[in-house]
Image 1: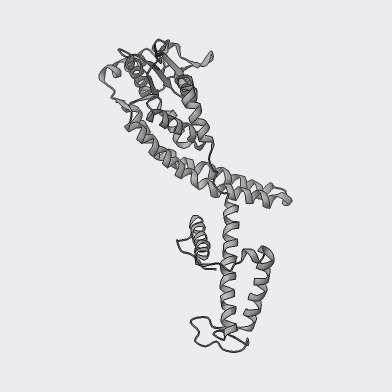
Image 2 (image 1 turned 90 degrees about the vertical axis):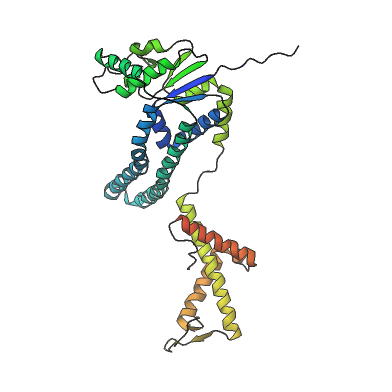
Length: 348
């Protein structure tokens, strides 16, 4: 008789707004967001998202996107100012260069936050959404009257109270496991005793089938450890973006290669008589195709070509067939676009 596989209990996950916002703005949590997306796609967890959460997220998302790009930028500017004033002259130039490189890369953090917001909004659409019914509002108001958590800190916590009341009602009449995840430990945790445990005023909502977490990763690892760890391992295999200085060095080499090739083509025209070298005092006249070049310019170009040959070696300077030449120009155009130029910018 075949052995029957034990079916895993369904896991319902209710995540506080603050956790969603941290997932969006914190680039280091990108792999965790990917793991959550995959577990939802696989049907390993079910998201429950109260409308109050989607509304709070909608109100805060633009601020999160702007802060993601601005916060590191302002920190770097202050660091550069302090280096300029107080830094050791010997090491200051290199330190500022590295800070400039980090600043260039930090522009991408704003885009990453915007992408994170879009991904989270897609997860919302795949979730079970619950409206704040009047019974939840009355229960939340009762908490406020009695100064029970999350109102124990004398602040307006109506949305937090609605959230925990909705979570409590979610469990009624349903089987499976239920998980509440929040980073708001001051309002929900048993501070001063054990911040990983819920506040005594909301402890009734947690039991052997209902669980309180302050870290999303811990929650996913507890209920879907094999799947979660496999996904997280996959997420660690990625190619880090090129450093700004690496891109600059590649652009510099490509510029030299393109210039050197054009210089060689010009020398061939001189050898064939199509182009001529004129003395420095002589007028060029009308020369739209650059076929008349002063001797001093020629001598300067010849010396520059020699420096390029010494820097890279002749093997790196052609000649190339049409495909190879197209690749070199395409690489230069693409990297210049990354650094802010328009497409097809190939001037040398």
